[in-house]
Each structure stands twice: as structure tokens, then as C-alpha cells.
Image (cartoon, rainbow, N blue to C red; front, side):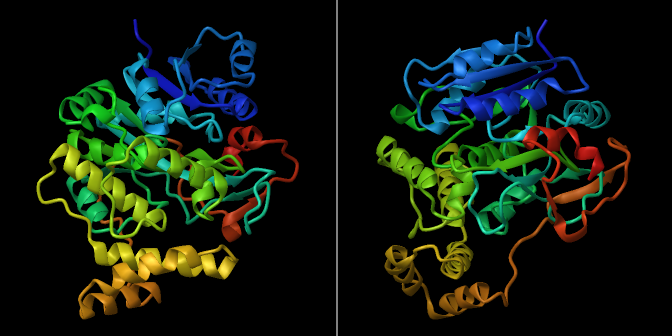
Length: 395
């Protein structure tokens, strides 16, 4: 009999991080799950780390060759056996009652896509301005469950009214029922000869954002739990986190993606995180033949300008990006150029959560609304991200 949940952990040459992520999974209070570690042709001691747990719930698969991220994730997904499937990055961690909470939402809502909030942790080797061994919690969380209007969420995405940290289902914070996965695969045209058949959900350059589009297009019911069940880690090797500062991990990844997919659909400029979000939205619209879905390029360029300004402020080099960005803006109509300028200076605020619908009358964690004073906590007295995940109820 298949497990209720598959927790899929794609990994490559990050054995020490993998060990921490797996520890947070086997600390779960809910027991009906498998841990599927998908080793993307690692050359380090990943196999030894997996074997060291001696836990029958943990199994592993290995790609025959090194794959780029969308294909690695597709390979991993194809081996999951659970009724619900969720992904966990090897630099992230789970709340110890994550599965119990998710299962309560599944039973009470019958949703085929369930997702939750995340908070952020800067590992000891993270060199960002926020510091090392720091948790960033964001705004207060309510512990409430909401219905989600998937069609409205897609509208917000293509209108570029989602931040790169938006509370949306991106597979890394999402449990997806097998039926929704099958519908997403069947409804996909893929990328032709450039991508494997299993890649109906994950597209370049950002497989997590591509998953959001695919799930919104094919979910029957979507629910959001406003509680931080995921700790998203940032370390020197983190691709997503390093993209916020143009660090080498992200730049190397994008070089690999463009080499693997030379025919990617690209926006006028691909300078920033929001531009790469727009890129994958454009790719999904073309591959999935989504009617009427076109990216709002004015909003995209406004957000790109905000990111460039922030990079300048913190000392990240942007001179190599400016010409392309300014050329894209100059191609707009005058009134659109003025709107871009207003977005950059903050006179227009785009981000929206209007896709959140009615509250579902159920309690999951049961602790009510909570806030961390100052929005951050120092990791004093803790040894790793694992200890924070296990100590999450103290927040």
C-alpha cells in the first residue's frame, strides 16, 4: 500500500545539508510517509549519508547523469509513490508537526493542493546583510486555513503582482494529491524534444514557479495554511537565495539553463528575480497553451528596476545589466515609462493576496495568531537549522 505522503528531496553534492534536512523529516509526529532522496549524480558522500539513517521509510534513487534542476525534479517526481507529494530542498527544514497539520487540512477541506507559509533562515556561511544564524519570520501568521482562488492567483501572476517571496504553492511548500499531478502532466505539451516526458510540471528556468502555474491550472480545490511549516534556508550554495544578490551559485545555474534550453522564451530583459519569474510564466503560457495569459511587461520592468536599485544600495554590481534594462524601458510608450518610474520609487504598490478566499472553519496548530517581535530571532543556543525547526512551537 502506498504511503500517504512522499517527501521528495532532490540533492546534488550537498551531503552535509542533506543530513540536516532528512533529520527534520524523520522527526515528524505523523508516521505515514516515505522520504525519497533523489541523488542528481553526486560525487560526494551523499550515498553514505542516506545509508547512515538506517530508516525503512527512507529510500533513494540516482540519476544516470547530472541533470539541470527542472529535469532533476521531474526525475524525482516520477519515483514518488505517495498519495500526496511534497518537495523539500536539502538546505531547508520542516516543522516537526508539518505532516500532521497538512493531513488535518487535507481531511477537513478535501483539497488536492495544500500549501503553507515559510520563514527564512540564514546559515552560518551566509554572507548577506541580514547576518548569519538568523531567522526572519515576516509578518504575523494566523494559523488559519483559507480557500484559494486558483484562477485569480494565475491572474495575479501574469499581472506581476506577486513578490518572489509570495505565499503561493511552489511545490517546496506544497502537498499535491496524485490526481492533480496526473492532470497537470496530461494537460501539458512539455518542451518537445528539449525535455523529458515527465516534465509536465517543472519548466525552466524556475521549476518551483512553473509548478505554481501548472497546479493552478489543474487543481480542483486549493487551500492555504497561514503557518510557517517550512524553514527556507539560505547558504552559500543556495541557488534561489543567491539569486537575490547575483551570487555565483545562481549565475552558474542560469548559465547551465541557457545552455540546456537555447530556445527559452525570454522577456525583454532577464536581469532580476522578477524577470525570471516572468520568463517562466511566459514559457508556461506557451507550453500549456493558456488562453489570454500574457505577462504585464510594464509591471515586470518596474519590479526589475526596484531590484536593480536595491542591488546598487547593497553594493551588488549592476552596470552590466543597466543597458539592457534601459533599452527595454525605452521601447515602452511614454505613459508606460512613467508607470515604471512610479513603481520603482514606490508610488505604485503591486503585490496582492486577493486570491485568498474564504476562511475554512478548522484549526490545525491551534495556537492562534502569532508574531515575533522585530520579525527576527538569533540562533543563540541552537546548533543548526534542525534545532530551529524542532523548536518552532516556541516562536
